[in-house]
Length: 358
Image 1: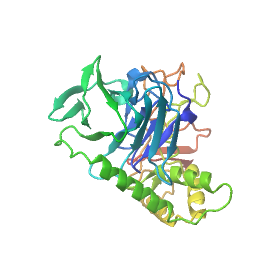
Image 2 (image 1 turned 180 degrees about the vertical axis):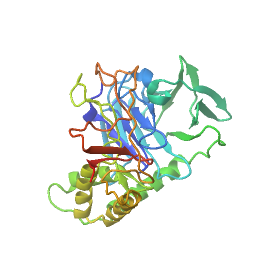
Image 3 (image 1 turned 90 degrees about the vertical axis):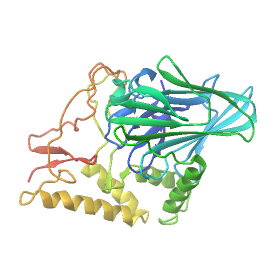
Image 4 (image 1 turned 30 degrees about the vertical axis):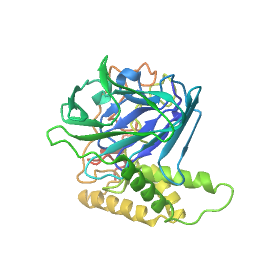
């Protein structure tokens, strides 16, 4: 099992994905941070959903890094057959959310294997999968996910499998796109153009802050990019983490959902972004805070929804390992409270604030 600290983050300012050192996307919620996960192997086994692209021989990568000051991940494997690189990223959100993966041959001839195992609703719902033209469509209730790739694909044991070989100069793209199942199929993005757009977006954002110097400039810059990736673009909300149901201690009872905007945590994030010269995020967050505050007058509350006040529902996601915890996870539950005067509210755009009622 991959350690949580070994996962790499991808994001498009609406949702996020986590990629393991073995080349597997083990966590992804479409289309928002707080949506039910379609890849939930992070909390369970691969049967809960994942997307693996790696050398057929398997194993953890030889090295990986982010490309410059961006959220474009480059993972490399050195095998007896040669060297291969997988480029992972989420383009800036257009009409639909995408995850793009490009397999690049560096040297030799490396056999590759892809396994797409979509399981909606935290691994509980298996989709109906069929081929539609040159793409694969997976539908489950309100959700539809489309896979576009020139690589060969076939269904095996409820998994879409792709086996191919890459050589120097080869670039094999895979584009995964979500759309509501009742709407027409989304237009797939061009992987190479999307890569340029994504690199340009993050480089432009990174260069907009204060110029950083000193021995810690690089880790500070990387931390700021991560904080930016945790912002929800439509409202300015900032989530505490892109995950849910990871216990504070392995096997412990405290499995909580941090895919919401906790007022205290977001305040710390704002302090860091402001100190680095990123004023736009602070203004967006303030604007998002003012709307809920006006909606709850004359009673002032420090926790409410972005569009309307409401209570945070509580439920358990049974049937998953929940990171080896013996208790059910709670993916839509607010953080536990220690006082009866503490209130919590789930926001309709993926934000929950804790605070005391006035």
